[in-house]
Amino acid sequence: MPPTESPPLAGRVIAITGASRGIGRAIAELLHHSGARVVAGARQRPAFAGLAISTTELDVACEGSVQAFAAQAIAAGADTLVNNAGIGVFGPLDHIRVEDYRRVFDTNVLGTLLATKWFMPEFRRRHESGLPSYLVNITSDVSARTFAGGAIYAASKHAQRALTQTAAREGAGHCLRVTEIRPGMTDTYFSGGTPGRPERAQHLQAQDVARAVLHALAAPLHVRVDEIVVHPAVQSVEY
Ligand code: NJP
Image: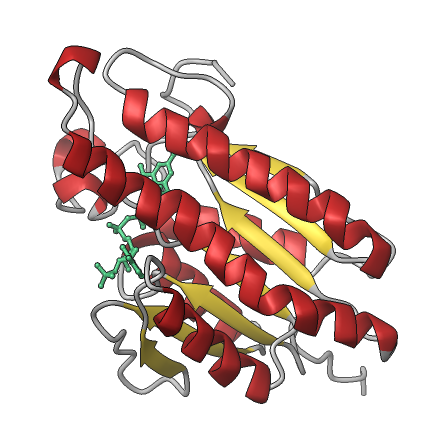
């Protein structure tokens, strides 16, 4: 009889922010089905009927909330943080509202910064014990370009890319494997969207992005996946 293969993420413990719906939810489900233990957080506590996924309330813009999330995940043995929580507000430069800027930057930039801050010491400690750790940031295809109407959002994603690359450099000393995932148009609830509408039938599905995350996290130990850009085939070729 052939030996039974263990699932690719067996034994792994993965913390995911913004996992109540959309891409974060799809990542949580796929990684769970790939053998990982998942700790999923969002402001509205995620619910996964019938799946053994740990869930918790989390506001990434609030340091106390992030600290509690990190403590829970680290107590469960977390080796991976997926910074996925994110929002977008769009409009021309001369219509920008300060409250929108603050909301987007607090979630996308400060949220990524705080979560990384509270997991980093654990990743260093794991390395000292001979264990690997992973950081995955879900940024955007516009983390390295921009478009009309995208000032606040693209600026926040450029900043998130800078945080990702800084974490990679600071984590290099303790072999932290850092991956930036840059999805294009994805059919989720993002920016008030409703998934499943016919005009978005050709967009990425949240599961397409989740598969990119799995690819990075299930790579052999000698491999570090720095960046994945994934677009729907119908989106213009720009990156
Ligand atoms: O959006 P959506 P996506 N603290 O709205 C959570 C990037 N992206 O899945 O807190 C904690 O379906 C929110 O939960 P709740 C995008 O920038 C997308 O598309 O309860 N969690 C929900 O679970 C983002 O970084 C597209 O409201 C917070 C989740 O975040 C990531 O993909 C294109 C939170 C958002 O689910 C996932 O977005 C692209 C907070 N303060 C990049 N605020 C795209 N969809 O086209 C929000 O280039 N959440």
